[in-house]
Image 1 (cartoon, rainbow, N blue to C red):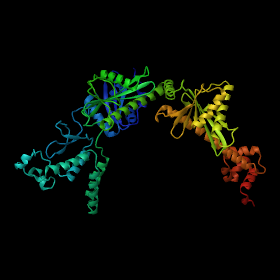
Image 2 (cartoon, one colour; image 1 turned 90 degrees about the vertical axis):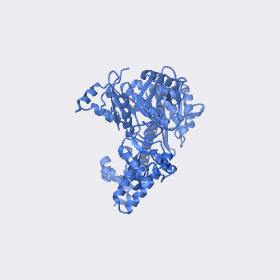
Image 3 (cartoon, rainbow, N blue to C red; image 1 turned 60 degrees about the horizontal axis):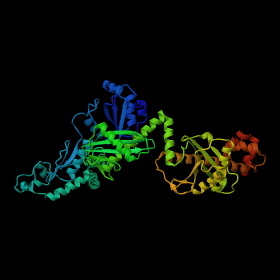
Image 4 (cartoon, rainbow, N blue to C red; image 1 turned 180 degrees about the horizontal axis):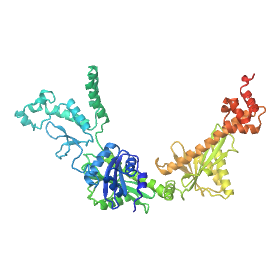
Length: 600
């Protein structure tokens, strides 16, 4: 399938942090980069001529742009590093070396050492990170050193070596940085208790440590040692902003493959994340067109097989949102919480972003196809016999029965058709009777469409619950339209959808496009109706008030209604302002009527 134009791909990128990948016409990876805002960063490559000739050459080769969305800038930095190391893109020259980000290691040994390292050795030691800033590592290690005096030597402190007096304390012991376990001055149990507390700090539990820093800061401040107090404050700030783990690099997750799916009426989007040694090194989203009414499980299995063939994968452990059949040799994990659940949610987020991007591109390039997809989705979601290309929604407006009106708004192909909107002044109902008002306006609306041989809608939406829906149904029965037009009611409180002769309401996904269009119809009907109601109420109040003004006729009243909108504004208006509208003689009569105390 031919790629969309570069301009279209850039236009539909998200404004989120992430990593972007450039590919040439042969689908070879040219470049991997990170961004705080994907759309802005990628756009910057194409809206100017670069000083670097190498960059200009690369830009001319770009045909396809892919991206991975992550939670924050730090994750983007780590993911960029992982992908460059693994995929070796041609135009990335800065990060292709064998350097990697540092970790903090708790060494597996008696009287554990704690230090920073770039190498992970599988000897049972614990590694925390990776860290994108050495400043953070040094701050944490300094904090650990200050709170918990630990050894820095590399002696083999076995129980027999200590007993035999093989080692002697060093300067660190004499200056108070170490308790001297090498000579038995500190027991293994006390030392390892300190290590357990440090482990909590590295997991992100800083509560106790922060409390100690704040106490130290306040102490230094009270002693007028402001430089030391500022050092403590800086450490507190770094720790408060520190994130103990990255979702894109997690040493607890080794080599696994993550698959997730997001689907709609026409397509399914399967995202694949490849995790190697705890790091995301590849992301790919595959779009599958639905041919039959396949389930998500069936589509996910098809997608996984296709991705396996494309990348020549040999699956051992797979993380998926639900159980799938991939054969006996593959270990299937459906995580419910924890680190694996987080990495699955990252995959789902990328599938959703890819779908949104495709929808935006479709809306720009092929709006008819976009509309057809939404109409098909609404037909399925609302259990309709036909696509609702023409929808009408009714809403009543009245305050304590005064000036009752009703509004009918019309959507065609999912968009407002404002020239077809209609207002109805209630004629046959006395008092605040919503049900009777709804029965009247529905009858009047479709009686007229039938008389004028105008097309009828495929769907009527009634703003209200079972009562309003029943009232509207009475009118459809009288007109012989029941069963010919689908009709539903929407209750405001829980967004429940009611159907004729069905006591159980339908609840749609709060994020579904179908519900969003229904809510838009309901809100538009309410806005259109309440505006007309306010106009009638204001005009009615103004006209009633002016009917008693001597010397003011109907034509003058209409002019004032049009200009001032309300009695309050007319009362507050200056005589000169009123005179500009109806002349000085009549203006004086109105001012004298409203303000008799001002008369000479």
